[in-house]
Image 1 (tube, rainbow, N blue to C red):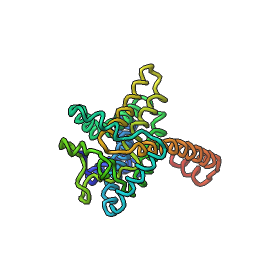
Image 2 (cartoon, rainbow, N blue to C red):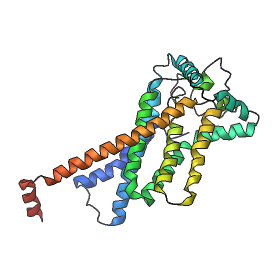
Image 3 (cartoon, rainbow, N blue to C red):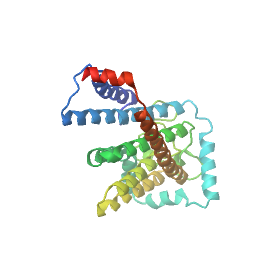
Image 4 (cartoon, one colour):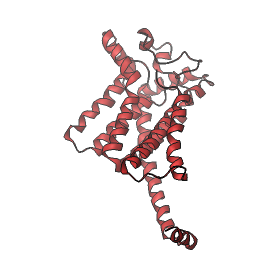
Length: 284
């Protein structure tokens, strides 16, 4: 089981307080480059843990409003049919012939999304530090917008009755979700798919940032993720489509905010502050 949201939030607060104490001067500001790197790493880890805590907590909020989740699931199924998207049931039936494959996909769905994103963030932070802020901000925007949408409960295929889907995680006792209406990871936060959003974001980031000719192998990650979420009955195709759309929107928003930030900073830099200049001269 993943870290509970309260524990993640407490750990995030603990990691965030050290850079804060350094800023306000309670600790001597370390000049060694290694210390500066460690403080930056602690701050970024606190951001990721805080976002993770928010993700876990958001699942408990949607438990308060489960009415209409099945109807919304059926509506998505009908919409997918009207748009002539492939039938999710066909994919699931194709893998049900092998119990080992189904169990492997259940495990992939339950375990790979969070470690994959953490490994990608670590790789970017260590190897491509200049690109890290853009990656982090885009990830925050994608995840935050996904969580906001997920407050509206939507039943996944395996919980939409009458369509023939099998609840494969429950079938093999591999479910990571708590029963509907009880505290724990929410089964009705199916729209959009954060699994797909993170997998596509990781693949896109590696392809754009890396220069290795082997970087294209990362495409296997979102492909396997889409296969896992659909074959296990955890998501509709449309959940992934919306997730990819949110990535595109987040990239645009992040760039616009970045330009606004640079413009504001350049204007501040051109302003002359005699009082501040005098204080700095006295301290020097």
